[in-house]
View 1 (spheres, rainbow, N blue to C red):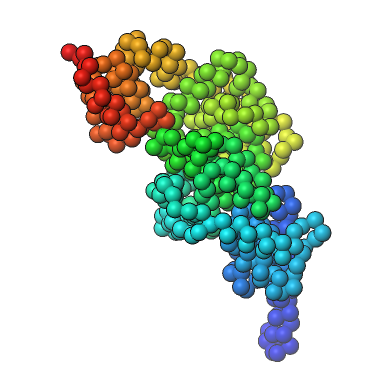
View 2 (tube, rainbow, N blue to C red):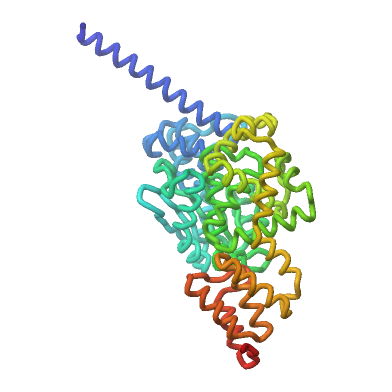
Length: 447
């Protein structure tokens, strides 16, 4: 075999052509993902090109554009400056020039005083948290960040550790949802900011107050909301954000179960109420992909939970992938191909699951009673004894007993909750309940 200089030269040329073709394919794929609005996927794939300082002009531009829309602002600024330095100002007339990306990102970054870095497990990048000012919310987020990430990862990837290839998630913290909207306005981007949090690309926005009230009234709500939004980020990495809302939001609601011990019974109670008010709510949610309002989130949750508990967690991902990549395919075909079931059968299984949630049904019935009545105290106390694994029932029972002056019984329930590490619910903390009991002991009528 000839191995002289001419052969070596030709091998180098051929190798260069192969490498060039590979680069062209990767560039085309990232550009295609961005054209579809899949910015989180595009940004993550662009990271495989290497550090920003080594990128070519076209690569730097595409990374800047993807990172900007994915809310990875620090990387967007660096990539935009790299592209400008190399003279690659714009990819097409319909896409922002890098000088404008740089200007918007720099203006938005001025809203934050510092960045915190939180690792979540060995091999996972975790979070970069941007803080506009020192706040109690920042402390809460740092405290809950690792658990929220790991629990969302279990649901999204089937393991507590996330794929090492994923970049750090970005979290942006604000005083109010008005401040969050102002931040997005500076960037020229949009995300829903009517609740307690929002996510865009790989970024999560959280704010301390909404309409002048605390956004996270429960001791668990900050962690639960963070797990919910992180699950949405993982969905975007997998390119399934285009799946029907009952799948995407329902699965994100399941992530809250893993962090908040109150979430399942409260959400199932919400699903019971929704199905009582709207008997066709399950079938309607299943067949309508458009946004349906927060009041039907418990119904989305019930449907997604039915899929997970009947077919396993991987079935959720498979169904999301199918419906996202084939948006025109009828749901009947997607369900049959993926799960070998029909919409009618899935609704029927969801109804059976809801009927089996006896504790949630008891909560719905007892919640109709006067909360300060003997009937409520007696009913909740009995429910807490019947379902000892539901701490929310025990909390409400203790509070009801305190309201009717049965403080010894209430204190016994509260002590049991505290021994289990339970910290409260949306109705109040265990500290709030103990203060209530201290103020009512003088009227104690317990035997």
